[in-house]
Image (tube, rainbow, N blue to C red; front, side, top):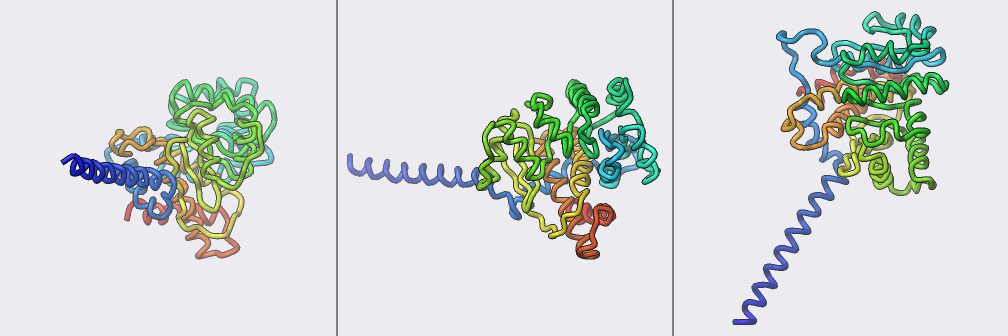
Length: 336
């Protein structure tokens, strides 16, 4: 009898262990290989957050996005970010740029609301007046590295945080974060979108040691944790999205074309996706961090635009060509 109990216990132990291993594998798979198979898991969550187009809404409800950036040298980046937010489905795009950048940005498109205030003496107060009307802010496209502009951007991030507004940081905004990580550290509605060079700079600023580039997922996860579980999108051959707890990889097929401005399409559209994800009921994202869902939506859309534009234009593809693809790429991914 005793032996019989022992063998029963043995079988039970093996069964429980096997179940635990399977469960662990499932967690690891969800964390680490949300590649093409992950598309199927996360895309429905993105869809759940997208507001339906209906005549019952008023202008502004589906997103008023603020872009903080644009100076004399860089006028294209804030335009790309702002127009991408609109094309994805936000209702209004505001660009807060320097005085001399404003006429140029205005001339690109009558769709954007352009405020030439970023280098004025009372820039922060001028922009803060608009914050109650904005659903998310994208800090960095075309910002430049002038001390005064970085100082104003820092103050705007601080005031956006006080209001609980999602803050997406890209480009020279990431230069600011590498110098002063506390500006965004621990803010759960903050999303950083570095390329590999920007990522390396951030990693080394936080860890005070060189980046071991053999395992990007692990490094991204470590950096996210060091930044207080901030959501990071490490752009690359595959995009790695992590909040330190979960890791998603977006390997939606793009192309080999890497023209300037694609990151602005990503950050601008992410402004809209983040607003939608954070204002959706929690069951829409099935308990997943809304930042991750929004980031996955924006990365897969950017890659799909790249793929479609490349299919038409080949090596001549530019970001303007990609922006023309937003509608059909969006339909294909989220509405078909």
